[in-house]
Amino acid sequence: MSSAATTTFHSNADATTTAAAVQKVLADNKAKILGQAPDGTTIDFQTKKTLFNWELLGRAITTPAASGSDVHLSLDVHHNRPPALMDGVKNKKALEKLAGQIQAAIG
Image 1 (cartoon, rainbow, N blue to C red):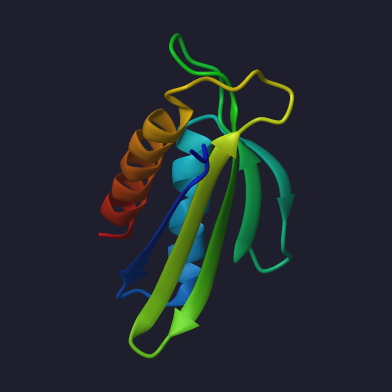
Image 2: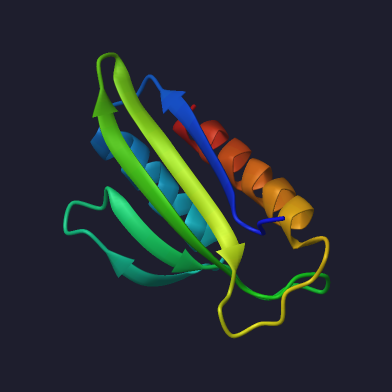
């Protein structure tokens, strides 16, 4: 079973506004930015370690769409951390929480 979790959602806001919301949520969650496209539409990040989870590696990609923009998110176990049996379930839950925070930030 894979530990990677992915999701995609649509925003009615344009790609610039949506990418700014993604950046704000990552900053609020104290994620470390590992790399970023100049326009902010692709962001590679690392979540912070919590009591129950190691750091996770993630990517957020914001693309323009016909009536707003689409956001594709992915999270996976950090390559320097040992895998665990429940990683896939925990990563999916963390990803759903992150997606909800971004959607709330967009308004």
